Amino acid sequence: MSDSNEHELLIKTPKQLIIAIVASFVVPIFVIILLANYVSSSEKPAAGTNAFSEEAIAQRLAPVGTIDFVDANAPKVLKTGEQVYAAACAACHTTGAAGAPKFGDQSQWGDRLSKGFDTLWKNAVNGIGSMPAKGGNADLDDIEVARAVAYMGKEVGADFKAPEPAAPAAEAPAADAPTAEAAK
Image 1 (spheres, helix red, strand yellow):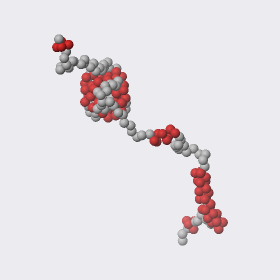
Image 2 (spheres, one colour):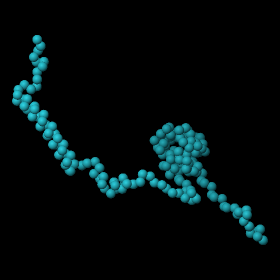
Image 3 (cartoon, helix red, strand yellow):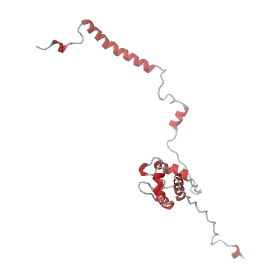
């Protein structure tokens, strides 16, 4: 025969059975009451309590995008090297993404600086390796790219001078307009 200790029950008396049945009903009801009380209480801090503030509402209602109208005939205002770096170059050169030399890290820039400013400038304008032309911003002028190259080079000790744009040429008199000598 088998050993009787093998299959013993936890409930051995009718009193234990009654306590187990009552507890199986009372404990879930007690837990439900506590949860309902917690959910309905207004004193607990909740995420998004400032959801109805004027700032939060204005942020939700703000337009997704904006349109900037630019006068095509207006003269272009060239950006500084620092502005171009922040707008186009910093995304990769700050973190070293895609093998880009990190901004200000002289050890990574050493062999590149030895190639000279003109080579670095042409590579920045035309793109090299995984770097797109003009850092991915086709709207940049070559002068702006040169300023950014000079700015980054100066941070690692290079003595680069970015070329400045040529002054606009004085307008020559129109060929069909009479000159003062021809009028005599």
